[in-house]
Amino acid sequence: MIPSILQSVKDKGHVIFESGQYNLNIIGVRTSDMTPNVFNDWIYIVYKDETDQWVELRYQITTDPGLYYLKNPMRVTGTAILKAGQYRSSHKLGLHRSQYDALVQRGKVTIYRDRNKDDVFDMDANTEVSGYFGINIHRSNPNRESTQVDRWSAGCQVFANPNEYGMFIDLCKRSSERWGDSFTYTLIEQ
Image 1: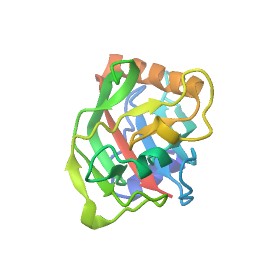
Image 2: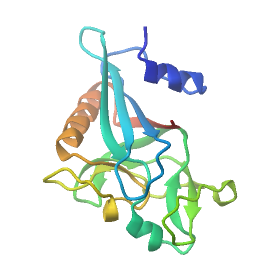
Image 3: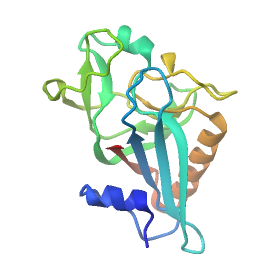
């Protein structure tokens, strides 16, 4: 029986990876708590281990930009907010800002553009655009767990805890040895 988070993804019509060891399902869950500037979302990493048993890990992240970038967009068109959906082969192992290992965007994703510079996440279908925006999956502070998003995200999917992030990247590297360095990211809403 597959883990319930995978069933949720499957029920939304998305693909899940059920065969092969360390074939990672990377699933972001945007919670209904839309409080800005906090790590109130989750990322699940679900895969089969060497004994073909399911492993389900869950870590705290943000799927939303920090308050700094909501009020100070990097682009005149507004701050990026990743739209829920499945992005097949959208990420690969690389360097975030040329500094440390991360999953970097390599395929098109769809975002909303929030440009009114307030503290509310505006996910208006009229602002949707698809393309390459540098929506990476990376960590916040390298030395300790972060409690506020602040400048850690301008639209990226960001881990609060650097140790959990290290475990995630190690799994991605292990997976890449078997399956290549291309990863699918699925974002669902609670």
